[in-house]
Length: 258
Image (cartoon, rainbow, N blue to C red):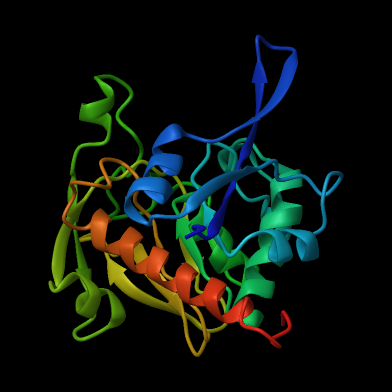
């Protein structure tokens, strides 16, 4: 049986200071292939190469990955500052309308870190450029030193709403997660429900209210050790199940794509 396809939104990187490349972390592909049980397909997110409508037809679901570039503040009506960091406008041009189209169609997506922030901006929300500069907030950024295992280690608790979708899926009101981000939600977008918070009040888990498909997004990185982590595995498994349902429905005889 052919597995459904999950498009993995890639990031632009400059190799050796001159060669532009599109790339995605191998742990994203591993989580999609081994835990969600779908075919991972890396997408070079640039509107010069494809249209959102083509992606919707080519893929059954989407993983909106993390990445060093941030969503440009113009996308939520603010002026660019040095604190906003680096950007990838080509990814903005693909990912933001893709999120809105998936919400409307019911096509599944799973937002991770930058992807979590993209979903909020796509739905009309805004972001803080630097969480650690806010009064009472902790430093959520990746530790500058240490092994990869140490950088992705569990660092803080996330508390979910009682009987909300994350609580129901994970079977716990509180879980431990890693944290490797600088920005975070400032104003929630239309229909964005914040379903989980860090101890300092930073939003960590969201979904889109009333959306017919899978729209869960998290601020941490569940792709790390996804096959073994008790929080990551059910998230990717549920995402994979949603993608399979979408794929089965869209390929039913006589059914046309939305």
